[in-house]
Amino acid sequence: MIEPIWAVTGMVVPALLAAIVLALTIRPWRKSCSIHSMHLGWALAILVGFGTGYFVTLGWPHAPMVAVDYLGLVALIAVVVQLGVNLSNCPSWVVPIARSILAIALTPLLLISYIEHSWSASEIVLWLSALCLASVAIQGLMTALSHRAGRDLPVVLGVCAGAVGLANLMSAWETGGQLGLTLAAAIFGGAAIAMLMSCKIAARGVTIVVMPIYLGLLVIGHFYNSLVGWHAIVLAIAPLAAWVGEIPKLKSKSAPWVIAIVRLVCVGIILLAVLFPVVFAFIESMSDEYAY
Amino acid sequence: MLTVNRESNRGTNRSPKGIVAGLMFMMMTIVSVMALSMTTSTARAADGESTKYALDKAHTAIYFKIEHMGMSYTFGRFNEFDGEFTLAGGDSQFTMTIKAESIDTGNAKRDDHLRGSDFFNVKQFPTIEFVTKNVVVEGDMYHAEGDLTLHGITKSVTIPFQKLADGKARSGKKKTGFVSEFTIKRSDFGMMYGQGAMGDDVTLAVSFEGEAE
Image (cartoon, helix red, strand yellow):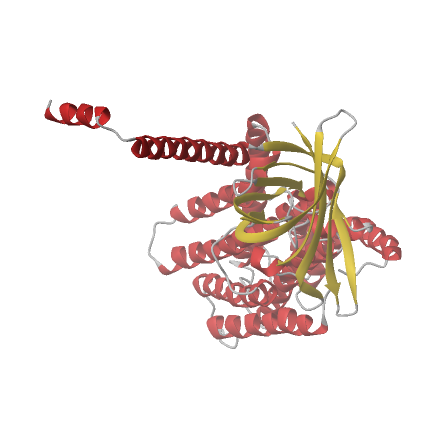
């Protein structure tokens, strides 16, 4: 159950903190902006915003024991990777390698304790190969999109994260629901600042920290909780629908706000395809009168 | 050589009083040895009377209750479990394994939630286990100190088992039964979700029978 006090501390506060951190880092009132500061800004904004919501929901961090602890660790590693490659003068080829390693490591890290009890050796190889490939592909495509898309991409990601939160919440994993909503709040907080920017690189860096958390919530939601398999798959690929805005004819002939609406509508339709049955099933089960 | 000679001299020169006293001493020694021997064998029998019982699942129940918003208690039970116990005085042992997925509170939606990451996390921690380390017997009470592993965390707890009665199964094998009620804190086992709305104390009521193997 989402308590009003949690709605403030787990959503409003993370959104405000993410907005403040991003504003202080990129200073949107300046006319110039750099890719370097965008990467830094998004990494710190999501770290502070999502970190606050994570702390409010789960308490002080401790040595990882359950999958959701590893999710916190994944988020931290993603921030460190993003900060590390931006703050150091490392060669350009290090950046994609570091991100790929993180994308590959994501699912084995989250499923480490699931594997032990649930899969045979062949299933481990098959499942982990498929999940690692999907993770690398989705994160790679979203990072590529962040290099091309404008200020609307963070909004699209925020909507997707909110949908993942609702799907988990209504699939009997309330902590996962709260973490999805807190991630959405942090992204929206940052997106509000990105909207004030005049340059077109406002989405650079947003996916690198957001996507591992986003996919991680789906992996835990399905494998450890009751999120239906095809719902998890559709939610995982839903952000890719934002590529529709990159269709050459649409991009060259349409105003940015038109492209943003097209992206939101396409992603929204896919998200609704999952949310509709999830919400319907949830309302139907309300007859059980269960609260906790 | 000198010693032998002295003894032989004593034997030959013994008075009737001395013979009587010697006989009495011998008899007392024999009686004492016999008594000691009997005591020891009785003690050995008691110590050695070790009977191993397999859990009779048809006559075993594991229930729990937890406070809900300070207004009432929600009751639940575990439907799948296994175990055995050995009764041997202070060397008794109780072992029980519960399948966490079998939790049943009479509400399917709540049970799904309880099986998930917010509570039991059954995919990661499929079993709840209790294994004794030490048992103190006081009459019918067996105070079993042991390791309870729940939600991946192992804590030392003492569970008081009260032996109700012995009996015989239809097969003719010896049977016995216990009941127990004890309370644990779910926060001790890392189950922090919903603190406040739900109580931290979980009271377990266990009743089981075992059939001698």
